[in-house]
Image (cartoon, rainbow, N blue to C red; front, side, top):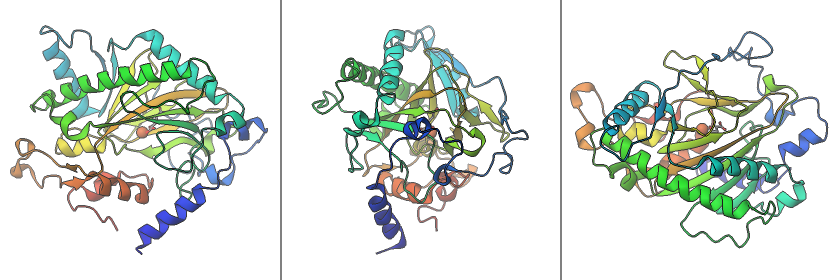
Length: 369
Ligand SMILES: O=C(O)CCC(=O)C(=O)O
Ligand SMILES: [Fe+2]
């Protein structure tokens, strides 16, 4: 057995010993961040200079793209151009007028927030030891135990059309209906976005969806207030291993993205907007033209935050690489092809090291050790 396999086996065993939720820990009145969540202060990490740690730039300059008219001929070329520029410069953008009804966006955040604020006993009914369970409430440890744990609770839905909801929560009463309708709506939107991204790269409209858009998994994330926000992260700096991620966030804020100059920028909440971030698979397909950018989630001492991240990714057996039309050997070594399942396994084992996993493997292939 390799070291990687041993580590994975130990992690699976340790993850079968759940500790409970972060919300419960906060409710118990703790005044300090416990060791399993604790990072060096952000000052020590060089992230900021003051203890309040509001180091990220105030105003987000992440592009906001108005998706209205995407299906017509008049605005479509402009939208594609804006997507191309945002993907090259930022790897992150927000979209408005995307067609998902505002009432549904309010409902999904409220309903899931209500779920996260229910007693732990109620939530634990949906805990599962199966890492691939299609519906599951996450408890600490949320990541394999050799990681520092994120300051959050989570609920995961692996989407498929007409999902079996027999064992889903019936409290809040709207939970099943709203969660299904939201996931269906995001499934339609992801198809449009992947078409736009394909066309913006000069590829056939269905190219990215056909290759890398098969799976959809959503994580609703509940970030409780933290007694020492400078010593914990909701999510440590990482880039997503996905094709794309569609994120809905409430008004609280906390998501930050690293810009071209290495500075952290706040992604300012815009009501009813989706934050779109390109994942590693899209960077690979585009042969590096589009970037899968590092981001992180900070927490605060006053207000719980909720976000709903939907990840789009290929099947584990899919071979992902740049198509020939995006390879120009004069521009240097093209990105290597990967089998997605192998990529993901090494991504998880690599952990969050303040560097992008993709930088380690992009031209040399897998086996980062
Ligand atoms: O909650 C957020 O704003 C972002 C979460 C995130 O980056 C992720 O789940 O990959
Ligand atoms: Fe992320």
